[in-house]
Image (cartoon, rainbow, N blue to C red; front, side):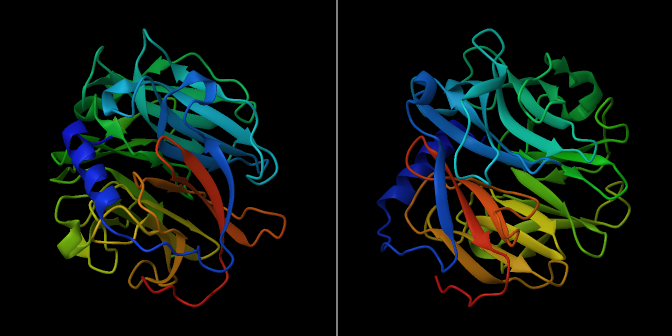
Length: 357
């Protein structure tokens, strides 16, 4: 969750830029509105996160914001489940949070064991921006139906305590390690925190990523890890990236990838079936043209841009790690659509013509 003033300015810019309406790319299906303004009495939903469980259930999360869409209006993390590949969603519930325990920035992972872990930031009361005072975790062992009591993991996060996870998803690597990336306030630094015991304990590595912000990571087909980060100069130099060849213990210096253009906004990345995907507003004029790019060479080159939504929005998205739909040949993306709303779409993972922006 970025600084409130910046978020308001960014939203005004993106909604005043003239963008010609374009349909989604061939094969893209916007299946459902998962969180909508007013659902459950909540004024606004923002900051999507979604995982696919070992039972192929989709479990979606979002910040529930009361009274307005302001960053400081978040109280709890809402969740909904789909057992039909995102076509319909079960009743709204809340994984964690409330008026006396204010939380934000959902960052989830579906473990190979079947457990779902959700990590979040704990906010100070009456927060109006980035006011993290700690970090917490809840988990579900029944496919996202019910959730544990919150566990305070602030001391385990160490130097990263109070930083804002993700938002989006954590990464479980082939070794079983879980990695979460978080940012300390807006554009100050990013941290990587790891767990080697299925989330029972956490530690933050010594490497920091200065001047970076909201970030996601993925394990590439060659086994290395890629960290993909938001920063203030993304319009001109592209997204910030760094790589690790030792399961996240050490990282390369920050590089910039001009192929991953951005209007300065959150993005999402996942790898499955030998292909790496990246979603964000594929634009430098504003938060419009939410698209999914793909790479088949470990993030060296990117192409095959598939358009999800051309119209402007708050611009955040979260990709599903895995195939969805009856044919098992589609990817899924949870994305911010109309004001205060979050929708779900599927996109083809088979090669298709690049979509020109």
